[in-house]
Image (cartoon, rainbow, N blue to C red):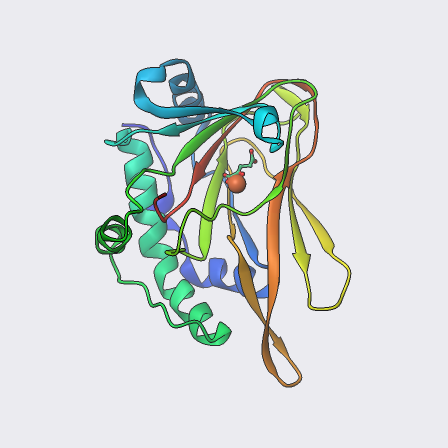
Length: 234
Ligand SMILES: O=C(O)CCC(=O)C(=O)O
Ligand SMILES: [Fe+2]
Protein backbone atom coordinates (compact mmCIF):
# COMPACT_ATOMS: atom_id res chain seq x y z
CA UNK A 1 0.00 0.00 0.00
CA UNK A 2 1.35 3.37 -0.99
CA UNK A 3 1.93 5.71 1.89
CA UNK A 4 -0.16 8.83 2.13
CA UNK A 5 -0.66 11.30 4.94
CA UNK A 6 -4.28 12.27 4.62
CA UNK A 7 -5.36 11.00 8.02
CA UNK A 8 -2.78 13.30 9.64
CA UNK A 9 -4.15 16.51 8.17
CA UNK A 10 -5.24 19.27 10.49
CA UNK A 11 -8.74 20.37 9.47
CA UNK A 12 -8.34 23.76 11.16
CA UNK A 13 -5.29 24.64 9.06
CA UNK A 14 -7.12 23.65 5.89
CA UNK A 15 -10.18 25.63 6.94
CA UNK A 16 -8.05 28.71 7.64
CA UNK A 17 -6.52 28.59 4.16
CA UNK A 18 -9.85 27.98 2.46
CA UNK A 19 -11.58 30.76 4.38
CA UNK A 20 -8.73 33.17 3.72
CA UNK A 21 -8.09 32.66 0.02
CA UNK A 22 -10.25 29.84 -1.30
CA UNK A 23 -7.46 27.28 -1.39
CA UNK A 24 -5.13 25.36 0.91
CA UNK A 25 -1.88 23.51 0.29
CA UNK A 26 -1.30 20.06 1.81
CA UNK A 27 2.43 19.42 1.53
CA UNK A 28 3.81 15.94 0.90
CA UNK A 29 0.53 14.04 0.75
CA UNK A 30 2.10 11.35 -1.45
CA UNK A 31 5.73 10.28 -1.46
CA UNK A 32 7.69 10.19 -4.77
CA UNK A 33 7.20 6.42 -5.19
CA UNK A 34 3.47 6.81 -4.64
CA UNK A 35 3.39 9.61 -7.21
CA UNK A 36 5.26 7.48 -9.75
CA UNK A 37 2.94 4.48 -9.18
CA UNK A 38 -0.10 6.69 -9.64
CA UNK A 39 1.22 8.42 -12.77
CA UNK A 40 2.03 4.98 -14.20
CA UNK A 41 -1.68 4.11 -14.19
CA UNK A 42 -2.20 6.57 -17.04
CA UNK A 43 -0.81 4.10 -19.55
CA UNK A 44 -3.25 1.36 -18.51
CA UNK A 45 -6.41 2.56 -20.28
CA UNK A 46 -8.52 -0.33 -18.92
CA UNK A 47 -8.86 1.53 -15.61
CA UNK A 48 -10.46 4.58 -17.22
CA UNK A 49 -13.95 5.26 -18.59
CA UNK A 50 -12.94 7.91 -21.13
CA UNK A 51 -10.09 9.96 -22.54
CA UNK A 52 -10.49 13.65 -23.36
CA UNK A 53 -8.24 15.47 -25.82
CA UNK A 54 -8.47 19.00 -24.48
CA UNK A 55 -7.81 20.80 -27.78
CA UNK A 56 -10.82 19.10 -29.37
CA UNK A 57 -13.12 20.86 -26.90
CA UNK A 58 -11.11 24.12 -26.70
CA UNK A 59 -10.33 23.25 -23.06
CA UNK A 60 -6.64 23.87 -23.65
CA UNK A 61 -4.02 21.41 -24.89
CA UNK A 62 -3.12 18.06 -23.36
CA UNK A 63 -5.11 15.02 -22.38
CA UNK A 64 -6.97 13.62 -19.42
CA UNK A 65 -8.68 10.38 -18.45
CA UNK A 66 -11.58 9.80 -16.09
CA UNK A 67 -11.16 6.75 -13.89
CA UNK A 68 -13.81 4.00 -14.13
CA UNK A 69 -15.51 2.45 -11.12
CA UNK A 70 -14.20 0.67 -9.13
CA UNK A 71 -11.56 3.35 -8.56
CA UNK A 72 -7.97 2.27 -7.87
CA UNK A 73 -7.75 1.67 -4.08
CA UNK A 74 -5.56 4.71 -3.39
CA UNK A 75 -7.85 7.03 -5.38
CA UNK A 76 -10.86 5.63 -3.50
CA UNK A 77 -9.11 6.07 -0.15
CA UNK A 78 -8.08 9.63 -0.90
CA UNK A 79 -11.51 10.59 -2.22
CA UNK A 80 -13.32 9.22 0.83
CA UNK A 81 -10.84 10.86 3.21
CA UNK A 82 -10.92 14.24 1.44
CA UNK A 83 -14.70 14.22 1.59
CA UNK A 84 -14.72 13.45 5.33
CA UNK A 85 -12.16 16.20 5.92
CA UNK A 86 -13.99 18.78 3.83
CA UNK A 87 -17.71 18.12 4.46
CA UNK A 88 -17.87 20.23 7.67
CA UNK A 89 -16.09 23.11 5.91
CA UNK A 90 -18.41 22.75 2.89
CA UNK A 91 -21.48 22.88 5.14
CA UNK A 92 -20.24 26.05 6.81
CA UNK A 93 -19.63 27.63 3.39
CA UNK A 94 -23.09 26.66 2.17
CA UNK A 95 -24.62 28.41 5.14
CA UNK A 96 -22.49 31.54 4.64
CA UNK A 97 -23.36 31.60 0.92
CA UNK A 98 -27.08 31.16 1.56
CA UNK A 99 -27.18 27.87 -0.36
CA UNK A 100 -29.67 25.24 0.77
CA UNK A 101 -27.79 21.97 0.16
CA UNK A 102 -26.05 20.32 3.13
CA UNK A 103 -23.62 17.45 2.88
CA UNK A 104 -23.75 14.20 4.86
CA UNK A 105 -20.71 13.14 6.89
CA UNK A 106 -19.81 10.20 4.68
CA UNK A 107 -19.05 10.26 0.98
CA UNK A 108 -21.09 7.15 0.19
CA UNK A 109 -24.24 8.97 1.32
CA UNK A 110 -23.48 11.99 -0.87
CA UNK A 111 -22.69 9.74 -3.84
CA UNK A 112 -26.03 7.97 -3.35
CA UNK A 113 -27.69 11.38 -3.71
CA UNK A 114 -25.72 12.11 -6.91
CA UNK A 115 -26.47 8.70 -8.36
CA UNK A 116 -30.21 8.92 -7.59
CA UNK A 117 -30.25 12.21 -9.56
CA UNK A 118 -28.57 10.62 -12.59
CA UNK A 119 -25.03 11.81 -11.75
CA UNK A 120 -23.52 8.33 -11.66
CA UNK A 121 -20.28 8.54 -13.63
CA UNK A 122 -17.02 8.81 -11.66
CA UNK A 123 -15.17 12.13 -11.89
CA UNK A 124 -11.68 11.43 -10.45
CA UNK A 125 -9.24 11.96 -13.27
CA UNK A 126 -5.62 11.97 -14.29
CA UNK A 127 -4.23 14.70 -16.51
CA UNK A 128 -1.10 14.53 -18.64
CA UNK A 129 0.64 17.52 -20.20
CA UNK A 130 3.68 17.86 -22.47
CA UNK A 131 5.48 20.91 -23.92
CA UNK A 132 3.02 23.58 -25.08
CA UNK A 133 0.11 22.00 -23.19
CA UNK A 134 -2.07 23.98 -20.81
CA UNK A 135 -5.49 23.87 -19.15
CA UNK A 136 -7.78 26.87 -19.67
CA UNK A 137 -9.55 28.41 -16.67
CA UNK A 138 -12.59 26.31 -15.85
CA UNK A 139 -14.93 24.94 -13.20
CA UNK A 140 -15.62 21.22 -12.74
CA UNK A 141 -19.42 21.29 -12.61
CA UNK A 142 -21.15 18.14 -13.82
CA UNK A 143 -24.80 18.57 -12.89
CA UNK A 144 -27.14 19.95 -10.25
CA UNK A 145 -25.30 18.31 -7.34
CA UNK A 146 -22.06 20.10 -6.58
CA UNK A 147 -19.73 19.54 -3.66
CA UNK A 148 -18.10 22.98 -3.33
CA UNK A 149 -14.50 21.86 -2.73
CA UNK A 150 -12.15 19.61 -4.67
CA UNK A 151 -8.54 18.43 -4.45
CA UNK A 152 -5.71 17.81 -6.88
CA UNK A 153 -2.30 16.22 -6.34
CA UNK A 154 0.80 17.01 -8.37
CA UNK A 155 2.43 13.71 -9.32
CA UNK A 156 5.47 15.11 -11.20
CA UNK A 157 8.43 17.10 -9.87
CA UNK A 158 8.58 20.76 -10.99
CA UNK A 159 12.03 21.64 -12.29
CA UNK A 160 13.04 17.98 -12.68
CA UNK A 161 10.18 16.34 -14.61
CA UNK A 162 8.79 19.53 -16.18
CA UNK A 163 9.03 23.32 -16.27
CA UNK A 164 6.16 25.83 -16.53
CA UNK A 165 2.79 24.20 -15.90
CA UNK A 166 1.80 26.15 -12.80
CA UNK A 167 -1.54 25.55 -11.15
CA UNK A 168 -3.45 28.84 -11.08
CA UNK A 169 -6.67 30.03 -9.48
CA UNK A 170 -8.65 33.13 -10.32
CA UNK A 171 -11.16 34.93 -8.18
CA UNK A 172 -13.85 37.16 -9.67
CA UNK A 173 -15.41 39.53 -7.17
CA UNK A 174 -18.71 41.19 -7.99
CA UNK A 175 -18.16 44.22 -10.29
CA UNK A 176 -14.37 43.94 -9.92
CA UNK A 177 -11.46 42.71 -12.00
CA UNK A 178 -10.18 39.16 -11.51
CA UNK A 179 -7.31 38.32 -9.22
CA UNK A 180 -4.93 35.41 -9.89
CA UNK A 181 -2.94 33.17 -7.56
CA UNK A 182 -0.22 30.70 -8.50
CA UNK A 183 -0.23 27.71 -6.13
CA UNK A 184 3.38 26.70 -5.39
CA UNK A 185 3.06 22.91 -5.63
CA UNK A 186 5.95 20.47 -5.18
CA UNK A 187 5.72 16.80 -6.19
CA UNK A 188 3.26 14.95 -3.96
CA UNK A 189 1.60 18.13 -2.66
CA UNK A 190 -2.17 18.47 -2.79
CA UNK A 191 -4.17 21.63 -3.25
CA UNK A 192 -7.75 21.88 -1.99
CA UNK A 193 -9.77 24.63 -3.64
CA UNK A 194 -13.22 26.04 -4.30
CA UNK A 195 -15.03 24.44 -7.24
CA UNK A 196 -17.38 27.29 -8.07
CA UNK A 197 -17.90 30.02 -5.49
CA UNK A 198 -16.62 30.85 -2.04
CA UNK A 199 -17.84 33.17 0.72
CA UNK A 200 -15.92 36.29 1.77
CA UNK A 201 -16.72 38.25 4.92
CA UNK A 202 -17.53 41.84 3.95
CA UNK A 203 -18.59 44.94 5.86
CA UNK A 204 -22.24 44.08 5.33
CA UNK A 205 -22.04 40.32 5.82
CA UNK A 206 -20.78 37.59 3.55
CA UNK A 207 -20.72 37.85 -0.20
CA UNK A 208 -19.80 35.29 -2.89
CA UNK A 209 -16.91 35.32 -5.32
CA UNK A 210 -16.46 33.05 -8.33
CA UNK A 211 -13.35 30.90 -8.57
CA UNK A 212 -11.81 29.20 -11.59
CA UNK A 213 -8.69 27.07 -11.95
CA UNK A 214 -6.31 26.14 -14.75
CA UNK A 215 -2.71 25.38 -15.65
CA UNK A 216 -0.19 27.69 -17.36
CA UNK A 217 1.73 26.41 -20.38
CA UNK A 218 4.13 23.53 -19.76
CA UNK A 219 7.51 24.63 -21.18
CA UNK A 220 9.33 21.29 -21.12
CA UNK A 221 8.98 17.74 -19.89
CA UNK A 222 5.88 15.93 -18.78
CA UNK A 223 3.44 16.81 -15.99
CA UNK A 224 0.91 14.42 -14.40
CA UNK A 225 -1.84 15.55 -12.03
CA UNK A 226 -4.46 13.56 -10.13
CA UNK A 227 -7.79 15.37 -9.74
CA UNK A 228 -10.23 14.40 -6.99
CA UNK A 229 -13.68 15.80 -7.64
CA UNK A 230 -16.26 14.80 -5.06
CA UNK A 231 -19.55 14.94 -6.99
CA UNK A 232 -20.17 12.48 -9.82
CA UNK A 233 -21.13 13.39 -13.38
CA UNK A 234 -24.35 13.17 -15.35
O1 LIG B 1 -3.54 19.78 -14.08
C1 LIG B 1 -3.95 20.53 -13.21
O2 LIG B 1 -3.22 21.00 -12.35
C2 LIG B 1 -5.42 20.92 -13.21
C3 LIG B 1 -6.23 19.79 -12.70
C4 LIG B 1 -7.70 20.07 -12.76
O3 LIG B 1 -8.20 20.86 -13.52
C5 LIG B 1 -8.54 19.33 -11.82
O4 LIG B 1 -8.02 18.49 -11.05
O5 LIG B 1 -9.75 19.56 -11.83
FE1 LIG C 1 -10.34 21.03 -13.13
